[in-house]
Amino acid sequence: MLASSILYYVYLSIWSTLTLGSLWLFFRYRQEPAIRLRDPILSIVSALLMLLLTNVHLVRLARRFEISCALLLWIPTYCLPLIALLTMTRFIRLVHLYRMSIQKLEQGVAYLEQGPPMGEDDQAVAMITVSTSPAYPHLEDSSTYSHLERISSQQSLVSPPSAHSIGRYLLVRQISMVERIVHGLNSFLTRNILSILCMGYITTMTVVLFFIFTTSSKFNQGTTKCAFGWEYVPLYAILFLTALPAVPAILGTAGLKDAYGICLEMNISAAIFVSSFIGALIFNILQATTSFDLPSFPATLWAVWACISLHYVLILLPLYEVLYPGLPPMPSRPHPGTLTSNPEGNDNSVAEQIQEANWTAFIALFHQPERLKAFREYAVSEFSVENVLFIERLWGIRQARLRKSEAGIVSCMRLYDQFFRSGADLELNLQGETMADLRRCVEGSSSQPPGISGVGDDEEEIIVGMEDHGSLRSLSLKMFDQAEAEILKLMYESTYPRFLRLQTHEKYQQDLNRRRGGKGMLMAGEADLWFNGRLIDQV
Image (cartoon, rainbow, N blue to C red; front, side, top):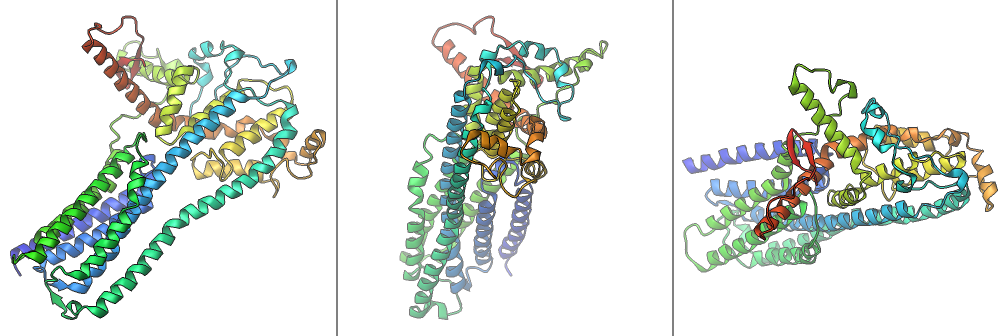
């Protein structure tokens, strides 16, 4: 065996090991947003198909192109169009996910703005009450929040529903159940359309390959150099037809902004796929029209390069982003009493004050309308706008003291329906245990949705009907404390640092353009903000 052949087998073993190891890590971190939003199952299937294709070409190089022509035709015929189909599906799902995120933002903002008017007896006392869950102990003791407690009732995030809206809400809730059924049916069709397309393609290609094997004598020769001929025309034609629908999907991502670079990644993948397709086609045509001794060598190396590049873009880059996010994690908020506990060692005192300033700025963001609006819009690019809307709505309800218990129950039910019920329009992505506890708390006492059983058309009958469900009287906003802590922690450690980095970069660009325009240096008197141990301009 030639030394070059041994090197090819060694490289094949190393590459296969690295690929399978990276796929294991990719699957292990599949719940991370940077990977979860990339459709990990589709990415892993694509990577396995590319690994199979790469190994076939490397074995072909190691054996000096002496390989079964049937194997060389069957594997690319199935792998290449399936990879193109999976890539196109990811494009379509990304566009759908972005549009759904925008719809969530519009729906959530509309709800926050329209709250039903409250009577004089229901007027709330101005107060901000932040959850004192175990994740953030002694939060209410900080002097920072004495400023927030003085916010007037006109600045409330949302007006909670009064008791008179109970009947109307419970009836509308029955209609929303029908809408959820329709939404679930559409989701079922969306999830299964890929399987239908794949099965249709595999069936079509099986028929085409059977026709080729019965009409061509090339595949009866066993092992040969497999010169390019008419047998490969159906492969390239079907590959072209499979990738053609990706054009409108790619154009549909124009203007799409995502914080994880998924759109850019998939555009690079499409460019690599198209360039490798054109390159392989050119090399194979040259093979058929020239008498070069090893005419398939450039085309084979081109295919190997394309598969390795696609694996790097689809798997390794997202995995690197998860393992090395580029931003240090936001520090946890310290106990307020420790801020001056170390007068001799200023380093710890300064670090703790930085932590306190970070957390204070994050909480204050929800009470600054302009920055909150920008934060919502940024959350759309991370496909997590429902997290921001949940905190807004929860704190808005907490901001009012309800004198009628029915209104408080409806507030809890509405919050649950919007963010926690399975299939909800703004369903949160929380830990399974947290979601299960909430659902057991609300739905465990009755097989029917609370507030629906025994309900008539009269509003008084509806309120009386609620008495049949004794567990409803125990519902309170405290049951959302754990969910609130998880969402706050997620936003504080992930979304908020990215948001600050983006706004800092945009402000730097604006200041740089201002200087280039001859308008002088930075404006004096701008506030500063400590962030991750560095002093940056507040944006």
